[in-house]
Amino acid sequence: KNIDELEKALVSFEKENSEIESGISHVIGDFIMWKTISDSRIPDDNNEATISSYGEVNEIQLNLEELTHYGDGKFGIHFCLEMEVYVTYYIYKPDYYMLREGSGHTLSISDHNDHYFEAEEDFNINVIGTAAFTIDSDSFDLADISESIINGTLEIDEVSAIELC
Image (cartoon, rainbow, N blue to C red):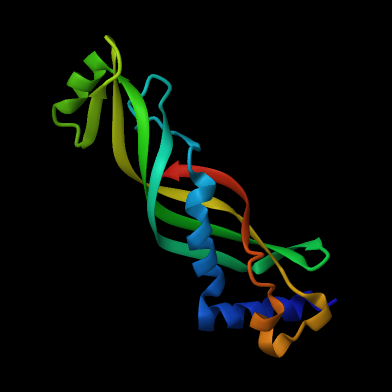
């Protein structure tokens, strides 16, 4: 019933505490592990790489004005963030030798087979998605929204895009 008031209270709460940003930053890495990134700048035959590890979130933006209400006290919040990841892909050996000359790519390689190297490289990526959390409707208090958000319920609901910066 009070979704407009909830949005205002959530904006105020987040400006003071950054708890939702912190929560998303904490769980996003595990969610994107082993996901595939596609981009023409990745010198794999299919222009794809697999995320094999991740660093800290550099920047995050929340869209607090557009909450999605799923029902039963569960809400979704859209986010966009930038972070560094380490990716793995396979590069055709002649392509690697051509790439090496002045391209600016700094990658680590190991021999995969007679025709390909396994390559590892750092990239900054943008991740766009939705995080979900639950508010206890039984003890809901607009004045103290932090007490109404049920601890441990923040999770990544979906990632709609992973793109190279």
